Length: 108
Image: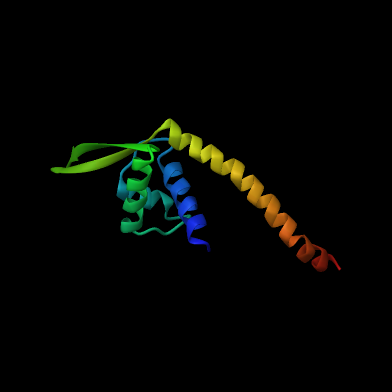
């Protein structure tokens, strides 16, 4: 898969994981696990990139004697999810065009 495409997909997956409630790294990985495997190092790189892009904010909370970072999606992050949904509709149309010959051959 194209690395830029995969990067964009993973960004949207992380945003979606925190869309309904603030969350922290381990829980984000756990919530995504049924759909996609992601290492902690990959996740934290994505979280930092999304923070720099103002798509999420971070706050630290003490938990069990340690600081835990909680991530909160911003309006820009929510907009990115919606943009992705619209872009994906276009990708699916292109896919249907590319595979139409395959479907035609399967019916013959």
